[in-house]
Amino acid sequence: MLTQRIQAVQPSPTLRVTALAKQLKAEGKKVINLAAGEPDFDTPEAVKKAAIEAIQEGFTKYTPTTGIPELKNAIASTLLKERRLSYRPEQIAVTCGAKQALFNLLQVLVQAGEEVLIPSPYWVSYPEMVRLAGAAPVEVRTDPASGFQVERKALEKAWSSRAKVLILNSPSNPTGAVLKAEVLKDLARWAKERDLWVISDEIYSRLVYGCDCPSIASVSPEVFSRTVVVDGVSKAYAMTGWRIGYLAGPAEIVEAAGRLQDHSTSNPTSISQRAALAALTQDQAPVKKMAEEFQKRRDRMVERLSKIKKISFVKPDGAFYCFVDVSATGLNSGLFSERLLKEALVAVIPGGGFGWDSHVRLSFAVGLESIQEGLDRLERFIQGL
Ligand code: PMP
Ligand code: GLU
Image 1 (cartoon, protein in one colour):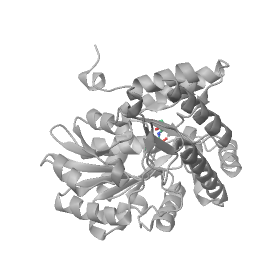
Image 2 (tube, rainbow, N blue to C red):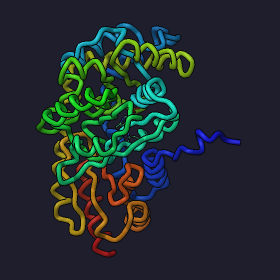
Image 3 (cartoon, rainbow, N blue to C red):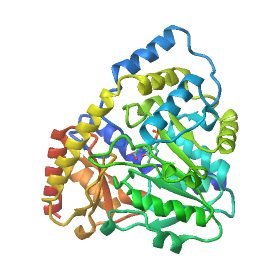
């Protein structure tokens, strides 16, 4: 009954475990949720107010499919100010979350017989989106010893003449690795040599701790013209439920992605667009405050993890995740996570879905007390194995 297309797709492990942890909590279980892929902060007040005003004004009808002009202008200003990237409004499309931006891009850029290079560990949805577009995902292993930086050597090994797109994600979900400027320069040269399109998922770019997070699109005009940047308000503004993301890139690709959106979701919610406009144009103090708090939590998690035996990890420079090697415990990621949840009531995401079954992902998008208690439990659990 079901198509081959959908039969080939796995459920999202991040969404599944996050929902399970929330459900157990709602049932009164004292679960520490280190699985969350979203900020625990509330959406800033000014953003909520803008949404309420939009409803009261009757701003509740269809908008242009790829977003209202005011929001596109605000996105263009943000990209210029924050990322040093210059786009015209027709080079920008607003989408229902960054997820839809990525999905639409893959639909318009690849097809059967073509390949997409994906550095691993990767965010769970990339390979599935590639398969849904009829193309084949090709894993490019990175190395914890070099801080999960994406290396030309590994890309060359994975490359074939069928490769059409390279997906980059810096800061990375699940490792928190931020690609260094010199690495990006080399990747930019390589993408040109191999005539590849680059999708640069920069959804965590505002959440970096004591380092710069350059965009590959800013490296040179050549790479700018073959890159589509994906971002959104979900993570930086604690707006995951509002579903506003965007893509920015060559006008021809953006127009095609918009055509696809015309026949699928139409515009992202009008009210959320007004909210996103407020998020981008308001005083940016709430973003700074959240990033500072995330940095404190990152430091606490790293300090505590480094005292636990039988595990290893690379200190994350961005996002809100620590990707922890648990292979020395003798358990694979699925079994480790399942037993940790059942026996110690701590939820983490198994690394298998990110392509690395030796690891689990811990989120520090929770308060300091939960980090402390969760890691105390994790340590006792590992000691008891
Ligand atoms: N890319 C990455 C790497 C993510 O972690 C997420 C989070 N779900 C997304 C894209 C999608 O973000 P959004 O919620 O805006 O769709
Ligand atoms: N991106 C988040 C995560 O990795 C949210 C869940 C999802 O959309 O996959 O947990």
